[in-house]
Structure formats: structure tokens, C-alpha cells
Figure 1 (cartoon, rainbow, N blue to C red):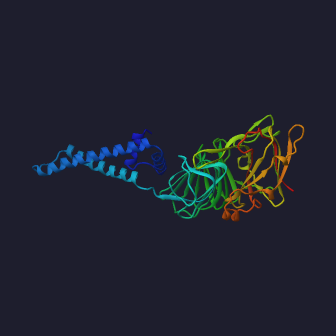
Figure 2 (cartoon, rainbow, N blue to C red):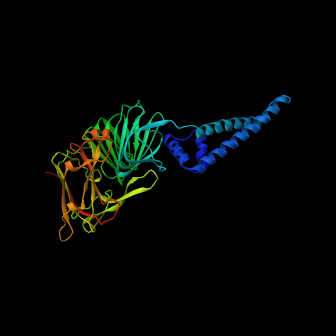
Figure 3 (cartoon, rainbow, N blue to C red):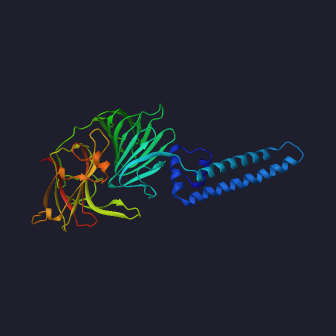
Length: 423
């Protein structure tokens, strides 16, 4: 749709909620489009003034029945003036807030790059969490909570009905009971989730959408063929771009306290950080966080994301858990290890980190070494006391992602095996 037609439909009030939210976002980001709308508004006002002056002249003239063209001109002028006033009001008014950013970790920003802080009330728009260790907790006016985890992009609006678009990443939701006939809608590239009131996790993956319901019921529709299914509590479903695959609700897998992934024998999912080559996983560059001045901090690392496995699983962290890696670096140096977690019944469980010094590694002749890190060495990433009090330890949580980084320097890190096991 070209900009002229878009603005015409906006002024006519014919845009959908989603189209209106998208236009609002474009107007915030695109100065040329704002100027274009102002120009149309000014032209409409000028045209309206011209017709009003002609109308004043007509009042002093002998009364006669106007022909159809005069009535058409007057009607057009009135509409133009009204639309110009509406456009001016839009450009000079503050959009109504839709959500409040209750809590954040790492870098959180509007799609146009502007950083935002906890406590801000946000209008309809698009939010990004930047970096795998970032997260954002959003609250709607009715108390419904949406938590973004890792690298994610979410658009949202609420004009009597909450409409969200999860373009990528994972969210956890605790949704209050919605008004009759106005369920919350969460769209992804491959599916639409219809939510009346429940707790669940939703992940937009490269080729499908993974839904895991903790409480209540969620209706999941696959966009590839329009088929849909009701997913109740303690069940999960995958809506794929491939319409030939079966759409059904499977039991949520019981948590595992021991699991391993061997890169020498298994191919990792494409959504994991790093790249597989010659039977190992090699570190790739990634954005760790964004600084207030716009610069980015880059790490080189590898991630193991359990939610991105073809058959999703749940890894339970216990007091006796140990994280093990078989790794090597071409150039010795410190490593930063991280764990991203959810609570067992859904919701963000906190992010945790462990720093390994170079002297802790004892590589063999081929450069490979085994490292074993007890869960007690992982500490909360966020330094704020109230966050540390809420999420003091990974113990008792579900592990969603394990990350290993070489900070800003590329030291040719490789991993051949990852393992979670009891001590």
C-alpha cells in the first residue's frame, strides 16, 4: 500500500487495529511521512478556509437554491477541515499508554533504537530485547503480564482488544480473564494464539511456533492451512509452516535432571548461537548489550537453547546440578558462562552467570579440556537487590538456555559436548 492510500485510509478511519499501530510506529520513525501528513492537513485547512470565505460571500448574495456542485464542494470542504483537525490532533497529542515496563534486564529498546527504562508507560509499538541475557516484564492495564526472554521482538496494541505480534523469540504470559468476545491475540509468523485467560509460554522459531500451556486453555491456529486446536493445561503443541504435519496437543514432558548434547554425533538446531563445523560448535559474534550512546558490546559465544530442539524438553536445575562442557580455545582467556531460566509453572526465573578464569583450564595436548561447574557458582546477573531477592538462585528452575562466551575477543572457541547432570 502506497503512503497516499495509507494516509487516505487513516483519515477515513478505515485502518484495522494492526494497521493503525503500524502507522503510528512509522510516523514516530519516519520524519518524511510526518511531513507528508502535515502537508495534506495544511492543504485541507487552506481548502476549508477558501470554501468558508466563499460561503460568507454567498450569505450576502440573493438567496437561491445551490446546485449539486456547490453542495458537493461544501461537503468536501467540511470533511477536509474535520480530517485536517483530526490529523493535527494526532501529530500533536501524546499516544495513550498501553503497557508499563515493570522490570528489565540487559538492553531493552523501541524498534527505532530508543532505549527505555523500568517504570515507563509505553504506547502501542514494537519492543526489542537485545542480547540473549536480556528480558522485559510488561503489564497491561488489567494486570495481564507478558515477559520477554532472550533476543525477542514484540509489537502490541490495545484498543479494546489486546493484539500482539511476536516476530521472534520467547514470551511467558499470565493473562487475566479477558472481556467476552475480545480475547488476547498473539500472532507469530506461523500461528495465532487466542487467549481468554491463562498462563503459558510461546516461542516463535524459524519454521514453527511452540506453545506450552501451564494453566487454563489456549486456542492455537496454524496459518499454513487454518487448522486449529485447543491446548489445555500441562499440554504443548507445535504449529509448523508445513501444513502436512499433524497439529495435536502432546503432554508437556516431565522435567529432566540429566541431559547431554554431543556435537560430534548430533546436528544442533539452526536457532542455536554458533555454527556447526567438523563435529564441533564454533563461537559466533552476537550482541551482548546496547550502550546508552548507541554503541553495542559484542561477545563471541555458543548457546544451547532447549526450547529450539525439534522435540522440546524441560531441564530442571537442582542443588546438586553440575554444568559440564568439553571445549577448547585457540587463544587462552577467561570465559563467561550463563544460564537463562523459567519458573517451573511458567514465568521468568532469572538469569545467572559464572566467570571462569584462564588458569582454571587444564587443556590436553590437543587443546581440549573438560570443565565442570557446580550450580552454586552461578550468581544472578542483575545486581539490583530486589531482583536478586526474587531470583536468588537457578535451583528449582527450568533451564531454557546455556551460554558460553569469550567476552569481546574472538578466541576461536569450540564446544564438542554439553551436559547437565547431578554432582
